[in-house]
Amino acid sequence: MVIDGCPPRIPLTEEAIQVELDRRRPGQSEIVTPRKEADRCRILSGVFEGMTLGTPISVLVMNEDARSEAYAEMRTAYRPSHADYTYDAKYGIRNWQGGGRASARETIGRVAAGAVAMEVLRSLRPGIEIVAAVTWIHDIAASVDFDKVTRADVEANMVRCPDPTAAVRMIERIKEVRAAGDSVGGVIECVARNVPAGLGEPVFDKLEADLAKAMMSLPATKGFEIGWVLRVPGCADRSTTTCSRCATGAPAPRPTVQAVCKAASATANRSGSGSLSSRPRRFCSPSRPSRPRGRRRS
Image 1 (tube, rainbow, N blue to C red):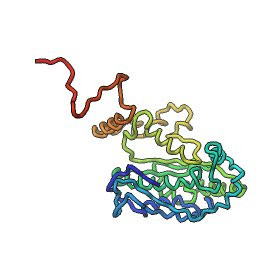
Image 2 (cartoon, rainbow, N blue to C red; image 1 turned 90 degrees about the vertical axis):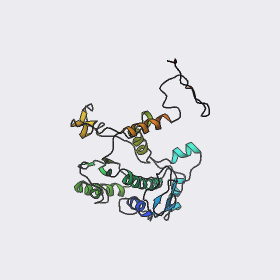
Image 3 (cartoon, rainbow, N blue to C red; image 1 turned 90 degrees about the horizontal axis):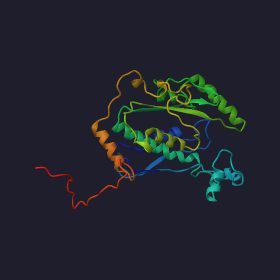
Image 4 (cartoon, helix red, strand yellow; image 1 turned 45 degrees about the vertical axis):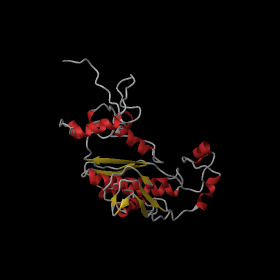
């Protein structure tokens, strides 16, 4: 995994990344893949004496329990709901021995990058808190108060559901379905607290658009929503589309002038964007500054 654009002087260690990799590690419970992977990470570049340099950060995680023979059947049989056939149709060749871009193994790079992102937030935006939890497995729904749920609540069981009663039922359901040679889907919900206003860029790089693209790029994701708009009948209701602070009538915090200017500059500097007119713009050479246009006045 290579991360570009990380600011310099951010405290970062292999141990900080390893905490998140351990949460993802296969073989840690009876309801996940039985493969045994230590998933130990090594930082190869971009960090010196525990601080980021501002240069690309390269992180390496080696596979230890690769079993190519376990995939022999997939050489001639495409797996349902998998990318086997799609890759064959697209490229005319595929690696049937497991791994690759169609494997959930590629998510290890996302987890490592997310760990680095969290260190950046802790340094530059202290107070931001992000908690995600399993809230639905098959037909079993959990009751979760996302105003109060903590990461410790989520980590209390192997299915990572903060509702203890629902978690027990979810685990049993997964075992039943797995024993029958099948699988079930579920829902993960996430809350980000103390997020500043004004994140994202206009039009194509809205924060919601970037979040949707990131989540839908995960191998098994089949749906994405923000808030409760897709689940609440009559979704024009203000409560489904605004935050509680705005709904109570309290003014939302205004972004600073510096933040607004920075966002406007970033948008205007993008190729093909930032122009408010269809007329061709005039550019002048740095060595020959253009004269101000207009009528002289004495």
